[in-house]
Image (cartoon, rainbow, N blue to C red; front, side, top):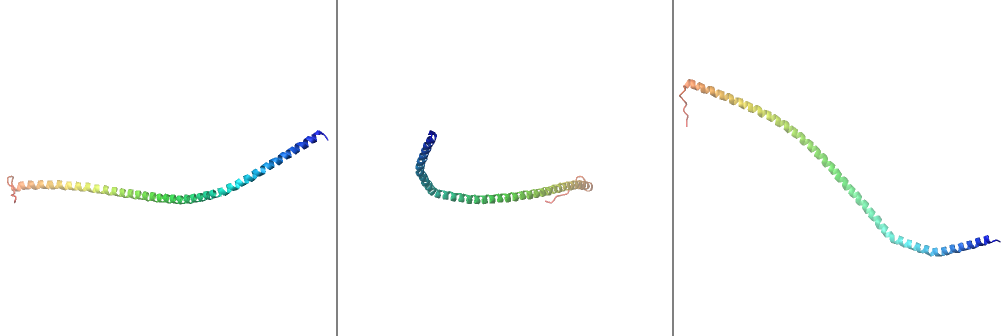
Length: 147
């Protein structure tokens, strides 16, 4: 047998011893890692349960908040609709009032003109009566007033 198979056998034996050493060193490490993972799992379980509980409560609060916001939005829309209707009704009433005031102004103007015409006629009639009085009673005679 030649030297190549011997070197190969020695290298294989060295590799096998190294692998056994690695396994011998890794087994305790794996056991320690397993214990650490178990401890972490045991210790983290309450934390995870608390986190789940907090998330659940946050979801419930979000639902309540969303419900309240929806209620506020609905109320706001209702108020906006009512205000819009009230503004429209007020505008209609103001237009009616404006029309009424226009009619009243026209009537007042007509009445003032009628009163002015009546006063003019009364003054003319008074002037005519005064002239007739002077003609019939004379220029110097005045009617006596009762006191």
